[in-house]
Length: 96
Image (cartoon, rainbow, N blue to C red):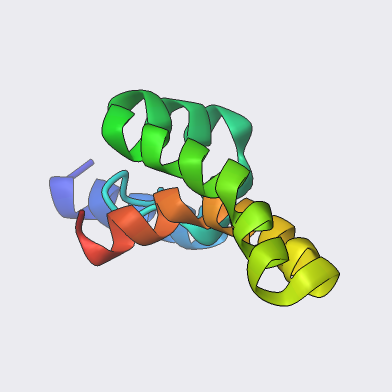
């Protein structure tokens, strides 16, 4: 068999069985942020950012309570957890 013939047969087989391309490790998907193993590796690699997130997660509800009462406290809880989950995605997407 000639090389061109083998190549065309491989192309035909590739068209028959479509596979999704692997995502680039430098550009995580949004769904990666919800994976606990991914978040753990991210925060282990970015210790100072992890300490900042600990402060944000624990202090946001109190800051919301001080500023806007009970509604602010509830908003602070939701915003702190959103920040905790979305920081790895945003940090690597923006280029940090």
